[in-house]
Length: 324
Image (cartoon, rainbow, N blue to C red; front, top):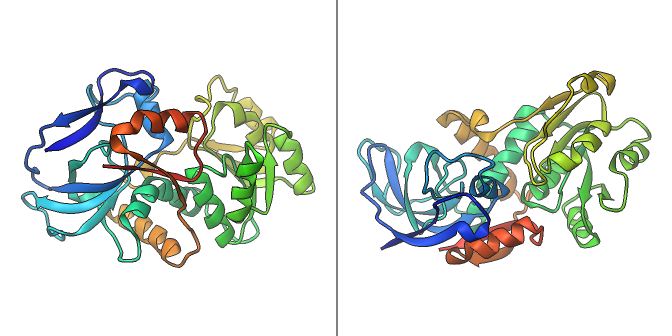
C-alpha cells in the first residue's frame, strides 16, 4: 500500500492532501523506490500556489528524495534491488513509494546517509551549478549570499568559503546570523536592520561583490544589483518573496554593465553525464566534511501542511526532511 501527498488545485498549505495511491509496475527505463526520506524546498510551495505550473492536476509535489530500489523496469542497467539511491530533479517525491526514471537517480556512497541525501540533492546540486558552473567561484572572489541560514544558503556559504571566496551573508535575525557565522560566513548583514548595499560597500571598502546569489527575489533585487562591482553577476535563482518583474534593463548599464541571470537546475543537469558529474562534485565536498548538511527539522510526510506553513513563515533553518 502506497501513499502520497497530492494537490488537486493550487492554494495554501491546506491543499496538500495525504492519500492512498495505486502504483503500477515500473515502466521501461524506470525503477521503483521505497522512500526513506524526502527533502522539503521552497520550490515545492511555488508549484502548490500555482506560481509554477504543474503538468496536470492532481500532482505530487517535491523534487528530491532517497530510498531503496525495490523493483526494476525493462531495459534498466546498472541498478539492482537493494541499491540505495537519491535524486534531486524529479517532481513527485512526496510519496512513500514512487517510480522514477533510473537515469535521474544517483547511487549513494556509504558515507552519505539517506536523510542527508534527501536533504541535499536539490539544494546541493543547485549550489553546485551556481558555484561551479554558472559563475566559477575562485580564491579572491567576494560573494554575497542572501538567506544564508536557509537550505541552499548554508551550502553556498560553506562551499564558497572552501573555494577561497570571501563570503558576505544576509539573514533576518541574530539567531540566523549565528548559523551563518558557524557555516563560515566572513561577514553577516541583518537585512531587516541594515542597508544591505551600504554595508556591502563598507565591508569591501567600495569594491563590492563579484557575484550575488539571491534566492529571495523581489524584495532583494535592487539591493543585489547595488552590491555588485562593475560587470558583476546576479544569479536570482529563487522567489521566496515573490518573482522579480517590471525590470528596466537599462539600469544594468547604469549600475556597471551588470549581468543578471535566472538559471534553473534543469538546464544545468539536462544529461546523465552532467548529473553524474555534479553529484560527484557534491558528494566529494560532503564526504570530506567541507560542506556539512544540517538537518534541523523533520516532519511526518502526512504532516506536509505544517511543514509548508513553517517554511513559508521562515520558521525553519537549514535543511528540512519529511519522513514517510
